[in-house]
Length: 324
Image 1 (cartoon, rainbow, N blue to C red):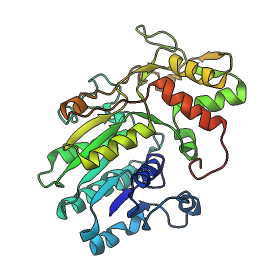
Image 2 (cartoon, one colour):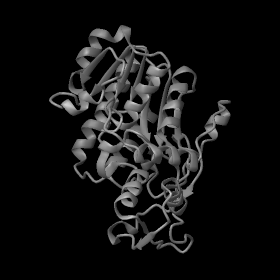
Image 3 (tube, helix red, strand yellow):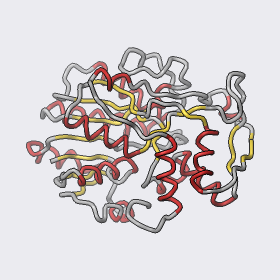
Image 4 (tube, helix red, strand yellow):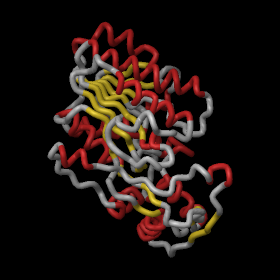
C-alpha cells in the first residue's frame, strides 16, 4: 500500500497515473477532499483504494500503519504570494514533521517535496545536501517553510529506514491548469500567445544578462514523477535537486512555444516590477551530480522535446480529468 499526499495536485496526480501505469493500484490518496467535489472528480479514471481528507489521515494511519509500504508526501500550500506564515507553519512544516515521525515510528520509506525556492536568490549556488540549509535566505513564506523543514530534517536522529527530499525546480506539463496564477511559465506563456499573439518578457536589469537571457531549469513533470518512482525502488537517503540539470533562457522557451504553434514570434518587452527587481532570480540550474554518484542513467527531456509535446496537448485541449 502506497500513500500519496497532495494527490489532487499537479505532481501528485501525475505520480498516481505513473504508478497505475506500472501496476500500482493499492493507493491511499490524501488531500483536502472534504466538501471539495472538484478535487474528488479529478481522480476519475484513476486506480486507487481509498481517498482520505488531510485532517483525517493520522487517525487512519494509526489504524492501518502495518499495511503502508511507502509514503510520497507532496501535500503543501504552494502559493508563493501568500503572506500568512501561520498557514505555512501548520500545512507545510508541522504536517510534514508529523508525516516524518509517522514514517520513522513505523519504519516506512518516505519521499517528500522540498523546493528550489529554498535557495533564495541563488547567490549560494544550487548544491545538493544539507551543508548550506542554515545559510539560505528564502524570498517568501512558502520557500521559508520548505527550508525550515529541510533544516529540521537535518537535525533528526530518528529517521525513516530510507528517505529523500527532492528540491523540485521549474516543473511544467499536463494537469497544471487548475493552479491558475501558480501554474508554470510555460502554461502562462502559451495562454498569452493564444490570446494575444505575443508574449510579454521582462527586460533584464542585470549587466550580465541580456533581455530574455534570464535562465531557469525547466523540468517536465513526466521526468519528475519518473525519478520519484525510481527512487521508491532504489535510491539513497538525502536531500537532492530534481531538475533537468540544464538552464534555458526565457527567450529559448518563447521560441519553442512559437515554433510549436507555428506562429511568428512577437515579444513585448516590459520592465521587471520594482517590487521584485531586487530579489529576482536571473539563473537557476539544478546540480544533478547525485544521479551519477548513484549510478543512475536517465535522460531528461530537452526543452524542445518537453515543451513541444506539452504545447500540442494544450493546443488540442478538451475538457478531461488531467486538465482541470
